[in-house]
Length: 637
Image (cartoon, rainbow, N blue to C red; front, side, top):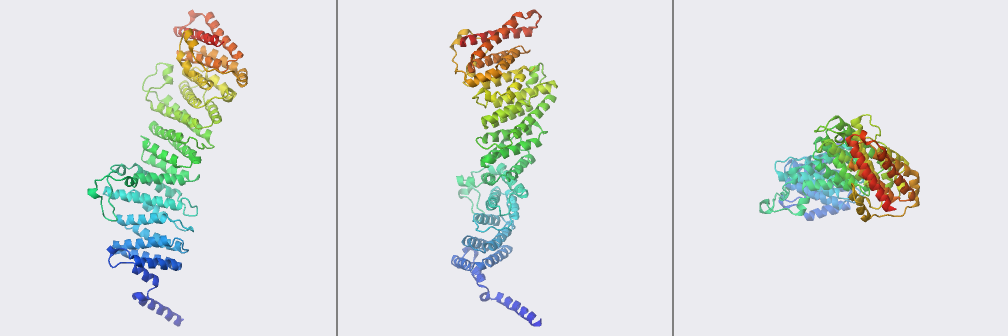
């Protein structure tokens, strides 16, 4: 035991004295020492660097020791503030990294390399932080043959995110540091996002740092304004020529934090898979909440448009679902906040054209209808700024009302969303919407509001549908509740139902011509009208046999409803004409004659003396439109 102890002590002594003698050092250390110049200004000794590179390639087992010794020298020079020699060490390690990227010992060398970058980022010196970022970005662009299962980038994500929020007093220095932070984050994303065996960058703790850092720079006014001045290069301590007043080139503009952050966010979203999209969307939504960016929603709209254009097309519906889910969380917030979120929703729905809408179609529409109903409840319990003097004014709130603007936005959004669906799904959506419309008004004000809003929604969706066969869209599950809705007490709802029928019945573009004949027109004008008419098909004849009598009965009763306006009678008249033009078979012509004659008979036998003034006006209007209906049927025959 004493002999072994003496031998161990002798080895340590010999190692100590060998360390003092340069010629007794290992060869890799002598080669590393030789790359340093006598003065730092001369830079890396290239000839000796070539020898070191050749040695590292020839002896890959020494690569990790070379990296460890270079990292040791770099730490020593940082402590002594010898910045020139620090740059030499960084350049040497970067060259070795590129030259030996296929070495089996590369993973061990990379650990020393990342330790070097770690030390540079901890110096809090802008020049060294920029140097470390530039080297790290170059490393991230290297494709490694074998992944590292234990390598982690937690520190780099935190540090680069901190650089993105740099608050340096000098604006140009701040811009460069933030740009460096964004490039560093983009490097981490490129290194790890597409490799499942690497560290999982999609963890919530990482995304909660990366995404807000990017959004912060995209929105920071200081980083967007004054792009015409080029920032000085802190690595060379040189500014722009001419005192920095020359305009920057397009490349300089693309290196500003705003452009870099936008590019990085798009790239991040493009790499997100099905299960990872929520980790990008949720921090984005939370960022807008924390900083109250929903009012006005312009920046939020720009961000989500960028995300929608970047996400894989088959996953675009996930973004829509996330925004709707966030709207659910804010269902009790002020109308301005809900309107801002709905504005974002309306814009991204348009971008989803020709993309996969996803399996949760009815769930999405159900959520939007639920928000409509809730908004109607808010509106019914909070009167508008003007006092309603009639039932029509209760249905139509005051212009500029915030809840009404929110409802219009949701209705238009559902129309735009339905426009991207195939026809069979549009029919399903219309059936789904009409099933939500209350046919009985227990609460007068709330149900009247809801009937009107949902019927407007139904009309918006119906305008996106192009009717081919009447039996396809006017099924019993849709037509029966629609005909009941055409006979409710609210004249505004009845008018909307007639317009829905116009949209679905008009297959040949005759409705635009009919609008010229609103009111009482002379017979000569009707004779000159040019209508597009085709022969009634067997399918249309079958439809008339099944549903014709129900339509005629609805028109008869609708004309006798109270509080009808001239627009209501015009709409009934247009429905009659469209029925004749689209399915003008013998049965329809006979039924239309019977309808007109029934109206005439009723008006001839009614006791006008017992009617009030409003009913008299309605009777006159009904008589005039019955006469018009007779003329159209006679002209058609």
